[in-house]
Image 1 (cartoon, rainbow, N blue to C red):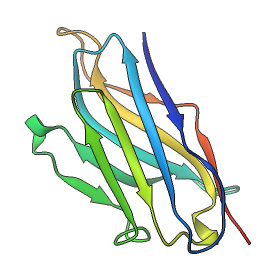
Image 2 (cartoon, rainbow, N blue to C red; image 1 turned 180 degrees about the horizontal axis):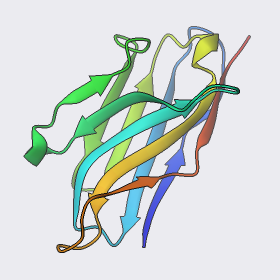
Image 3 (cartoon, one colour; image 1 turned 180 degrees about the vertical axis):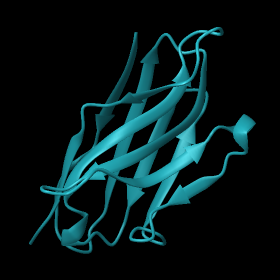
Image 4 (tube, one colour; image 1 turned 135 degrees about the vertical axis):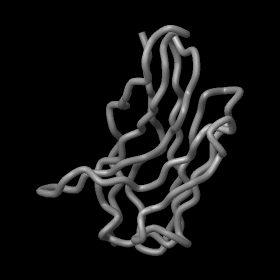
Length: 124
């Protein structure tokens, strides 16, 4: 069984910074990508940032709304992914979800896994 556990959310003032962390554990054979999504009240879940595995090129992709403010990083050895968020705005307020595309065993197809979500609130 695979688990994704997030940490690091909270309340921050506009212009402030936060770091989110996510650790994947359990039966993991290979991780193709790890990333972060967010969902604000009344809105659909949206991609924030994703980082591909080294074997898949190691590239990163960001939502236009967070480019130049957020940075995603991954520790392949520890199966963790971090999201450094700077210059936070009230519109960044949402529940942030960790996501991983991985294969639990060498013979299984890639599957999507989600964390339980962590609240980020940007308010003065």
